[in-house]
Length: 491
Image 1 (cartoon, rainbow, N blue to C red):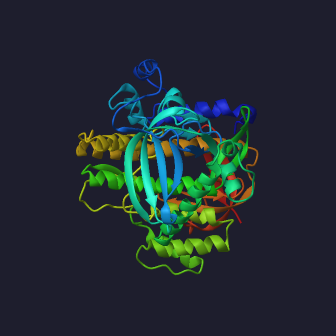
Image 2: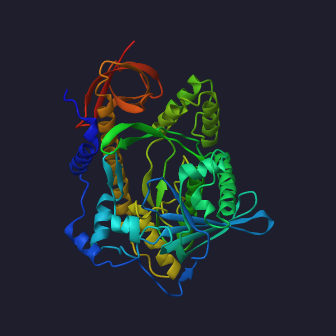
Image 3: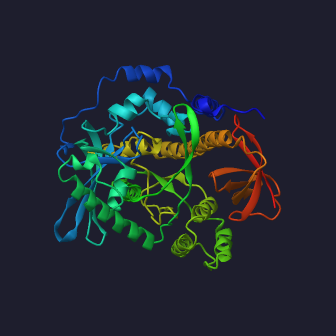
């Protein structure tokens, strides 16, 4: 085994990421035609027409990760009579600078997503767009597609609308700081205190989000929590892996995005437009989920039942919060992957089993995901009364392509994350760890050790193990370049 110097790990991981992308058919660099188009863009898009409202005076703000620079969404609330609240979600108008079938669009369509690796970000669109001219940056006038939603005091949606607008962010906020303040565990973030009325507006937003979350879970939305570990660096040196924790501010944005994505799907259907939906089908491995629940003293129905599964997950979280993320990961694997499909107006929607919603499309991250850019173009055409910019057959091909590319991008991200983990574990060959089985198929058996949170292949001792089983494993072999981490069953 060759030992890798972790003090210079960042450039090594970026080199690995580029190689893995190329091996899997993704493009880490922008082609010359796309860069030439970029050179011809001299500023943010502007528009002065009957379809664009001026909403720059509203208390818009963004809430994202501390280091996020590609800002796709802004939110704001407005109190209505009888305890009702209007929520506005502004989505960056990426299409205004990246028209369909342009060189920049061709590259975005090829990769279909930004790729976030331990070696750095490979954006779907150049940084001059995604982190500047098509990003909803602080104090910058930007075009947006606005999704307006009105909710009654109990959280029930009373109405919705979609239109184009000019917006301006008043505050750039981070999840952790906002969450600590909302939960009474931290001070008011400076970005909030510097804008009169923003604190009350965010409290109003949080109240609506909490009610939306309660309604979704009452309908069977699954309360899942997985360990997403990110590499932590000091300069170019890899210091460790840090688990990404859920919090109230992340929930706020997630709940609004889920609601907005439902509105966009129904809006297109009402206009007679086809759409690209995000679906998670009824799980085929329900029997194994039933077995997991039975091993923890819970009886689930023999047929898939999201509400019964959610009740089990809530009780499991309360009984063993430390290991709940591992149970969640097992359930996610057994539920199966999400996919993009085309929804024809009038046909029965497949729905999203995990979110317990029937109408759901991706529309809220057009700087980062190509399906959202497709949806944005459809929405803008529907708003202005234009013909759909995509034929149904074209959308079908794109939906299949986006599903396939998303799977490839996920594999790249996982492989580079394992390369980072292998760097950290290279001095621990032969040590034993507690682990949980996260995958078992003819392609291989996989386990996740608990500390540090790393997944690897179980190379020997496979007999009798299945997803969700707890096992004791020994670190057997690593390969930083290939991202291989092999364990053998011990004890």
